[in-house]
Image (cartoon, rainbow, N blue to C red; front, side, top):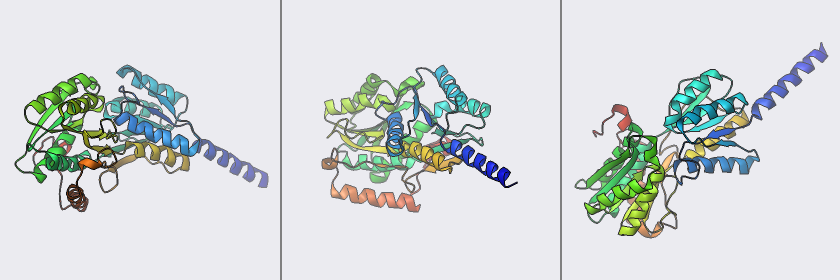
Amino acid sequence: MKGVFFASVTALAISASMAQAADPAVVYDQAGKFDKSFNEGVYNGVKKYTTDSGIQVREFEPKNEAQVEQGLRRLAKRGYSPIVTVGFNMTSAVEKVAKDFPNINFTLIDGVIDLPNVQSVIFKEHEGSFLVGALAAMASKTDTVGFIGGMDIPLIRKFGCGYEQGVKYASSSATVFQNMTGSTGAAFNDPTKGSELAKSQFSKGADVVFAAAGGTGIGVYQAAKDEGKLAIGVDSNQNHIQPGTMLTSMVKRVDQAAYKTYKDAAAGTWKPGMVVLGLAEGGVDWALDDNNASLISADMKAKLKDIRAKIVSGDIKVHDYMSDNTCNY
């Protein structure tokens, strides 16, 4: 009897260690892990996890939409878990594959799926966008600023609406131009179109433009530099891309979301369900470093600190476009 008990305990220990030693993976979206924005933020979290743990994360970069589901299915079949999936546009593929592989865990960033093996990580982008909108209004000499989104979807409208609210909070008389780049995923990787839209807004008087457009933003930042205007980056800290031109970046800590997924899985504490990250949770913020320090006065910093505290406390309520698909505030 004693021998049977010992054997069962040993089997349990082995199965537990196997569960914790499962190979982690990540599937980026089509913009690729070096898009200097959203995907690269996730990649930074992947890289940090590998550095800290010594565990390699299997990476997959689909070239088209069809490859997303194929890649997910292949990773799941081979037992990779957890699999971090990057972007709302993977929601359908993740849902299908997660249903077919109930023993594999998935973390979906920027999308929501209600399944017992899926964790959905979403962000309060409107809160971070409010902060950089207020900063844009403070920095503007023309009282006119712009916003350039990528794909025209509610998530990107959420950035634009938060930004507009922040601008108007700091300067009620300000004008805010808004343009979207396109209606497909390609809108997140079109620097030429980004440059054209930025130049159009600059020609109408805007002197600060916030781009929530992935790789398209690279064209916006270049146009801002060429025209002697200011730009605001998104997702990753992009201040280094055009130092002295980048007023700030609205940082979305997708790196932490990826890192925490792998760390929790290794510790056996990963859980399905929804995780919502805003200013209070350190999920979004504005970026200050050596590349933009000369553009930010002590007064601007103090005002932003106050606004940030008021959003966290609830004294400032930032309307979430996605709550009703309007920007009424």
